[in-house]
Length: 298
Image (cartoon, rainbow, N blue to C red; front, side, top):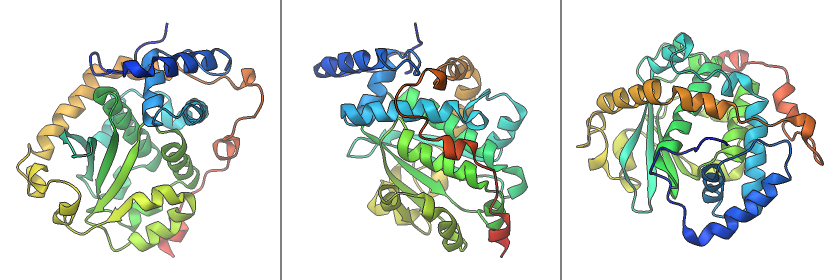
């Protein structure tokens, strides 16, 4: 029997959706290439797809297909590994304890060390997805998420580290596979190199995600979108310090989620058992790796 996805007590599926769950369970029984999933996993995808059954099925297939064929991003996800620890030392990721009036959870991300050599791209993306998975497990069935990304310290050195195929996989995962409803992405402390960054990534972004991106200067520019008073003290708010919240989140990941990551990793797609359409991501999972180093320097 597959393990439950959510932290105990946070998943409260609506009783009115029992028929949707039954439908998904019947569908899954015929998808021999997909792993056995708990009811919580099925509700996770139903919820993020607004209970649109066809969309939920596609997202489940996309999710396990891409994750299984991308072990560099979704395999061996032990937060105590030295390479993961190195990322956790220079990137802070935290949730806000409150929700927006629309019921959205808010996640904040920032660099604490601006040395681009300390942020290898593939491991950074892997760690980011680990944090996001943990937060989804902790949050339950929420309406949606808003990401606030502090780009202070981001420069062309970071752009030069980007691996093209990994970027494409990551953006594909966010757009086609993410088991959460992303509502907006706010970039604060937007760097001068943002035009070059967007020139590189824009061809990989669908119009829906592109429309979610908002670029700002200092944190005060978020006033029309979130309560500034509720932000961490480092951003002029009255909330707990970013540093304190992050210390708690890091401890949570390192102590409570090691086994959870291991269990999630056992849920894989088996392409040898797939019938009908072939792996939709074979092109990006088997393509040659490259980087933006030359483009960033030019």
